[in-house]
Image (cartoon, rainbow, N blue to C red):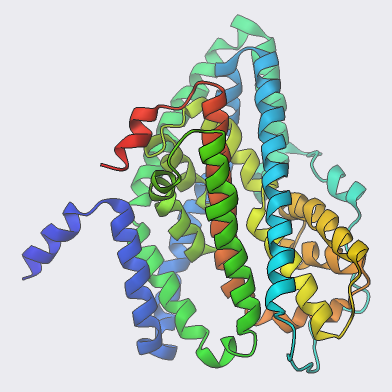
Length: 414
């Protein structure tokens, strides 16, 4: 019996094993109850392992991608196209989020209780401050602290300088290529542990959040999840068909492993190694494009976060009985776009980013504490949506650059 089970598991692909881990974890959590806490170190260890790869992976991927492009004008074109597509998809996501909140009315009938957890002197950082944080005063400190936006900025500048010095930089290029091979191999090794890590994380989450916590704010959860699913299926799927001429169902199958890990860990940056592996091995995106597009997307492309901010702002307005005008909706949309782009550069990103949106239309910051209890549940879906958006744009950029291996992409349907 055990031998048969073992053989069956070995015959399953990694994404199938990860999905099995998620399902078993969801079933085990409620059964174990408070005893599920013994699994927490297992889940935390898995998150630590994948986070360990993020900074070195960003550096070698971006520097390697820029040096392989060689042509600065082509790199500039890829950059403009990447950022442009990210802004378009995030804007669409915000519109869907606002529409979902307006239709479903998640804040209607929610009772206001005493809230806590938001300091009275709490102040959201300004846009100028957010932009200044992009520039690392000390690159080594940025690497040490894991500030991904600053690491990206330094990596881009380093890659451009490495290309500019020509043949003198050849030894460094070779070193980066060797480091890339080692880190990709290490990524493959850690991914094999994903089913166990996902099982532990989901078991702990489902044990901690019972129905009693979810029911009062069920409509908010429904609104965020529905908006995210609509965005993935309609917006991203539509762009893949119209611009990429690829099958969105094959895309979703190819990125499923990254989606599950993002959903389980609630960290897009931590999922980056898996996202890059899926893009290269399952979707046929070249290493050059994946290494350039995905690290940038992990920090500035926040479709799910933008949806969450839009829905949460409208939810709180409805909860407090505050009527929003058309201009208020427009302000929420514009601020959510800017805040979602800057989220990764802000300490306590989710809280700070949402606070910027609330301040923009005069909503009480104390309302943040209303949804703090279910933030983990919301974060799971918005992170999976963020990762899906990153992968979709990598496919579109690869198509535009002639860097998509359609044979690899199509094999996922086999």
